[in-house]
Image (tube, rainbow, N blue to C red; front, side):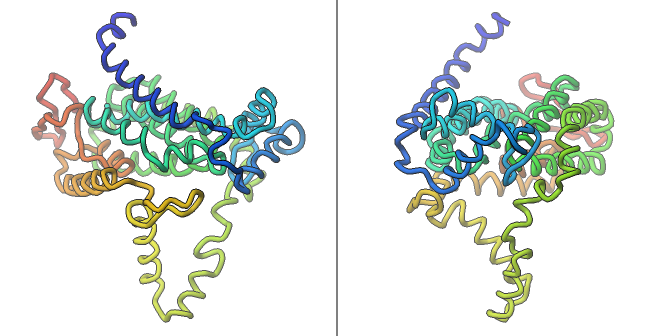
Length: 361
């Protein structure tokens, strides 16, 4: 352990420095900036204080798809630091800071040290990530450290054929369900990933099937209490999906009648608008920013990575199945630990890295 730390001390120090800078931006005057609590923050604070008794005393319950366990942790902060803005916003600030080392692990596995370091620098100084690390209105910020860690454990466990990694990834995903609904999307992504692996990369997936089973075993074992609660309270589980949606609210039918456009045209327009809301439209929601959620540099890298990932799908020898999945999640175009790696096809349809001795199928 000490030998490993000594060998990688420069890398560890670099990540620690970026993490400290990120923490400074997320904790600086946390109780005073933003100056006011928005309505959602106030509601969460009120309901968090009611988790000692009633329905939310059950850690597996949900409130507006916030996990009761997460709400109970907020209540613990309020009890320890007092009922104030700092205590209410403490967990999002911690989660936003933890996103730096967590994302580094996954980005390093995908693209190597240099790409991982650039990635966490961009995230550390992202104005939207900093803002959502400083408010408690939504819990998406915890997905920025939980999801990369879950995916890192899953992918690295499959590639290294280490069951403890995949089991830990499944356990962490199950715990994520007691935080926010982001876990539902990650679970769907993992299912799609494994389906693609089974259909198109069967030899590779067959040799790692036991690790995949261990992932779901860890997930199912840990999720059982929550699953029992969801089964008896399905309306809470699907709460956010059934509120004010494009289809549920009747908005689509009303818009079709008002504009004379077809459903496909309207829905495609909504898809484009949602995509551009990240890189083009100003982020007025929550904090009235005149800039989009992603900066010009981040947007350029985002689009370039998306184009590269889509291009490499065409070559099954180069675009390994795990990169297909992670490329969709992070729009990353890198294949191996280093961008200098080269792949050569094998007769069985696999690909193998021949640089740096990493010998990864």
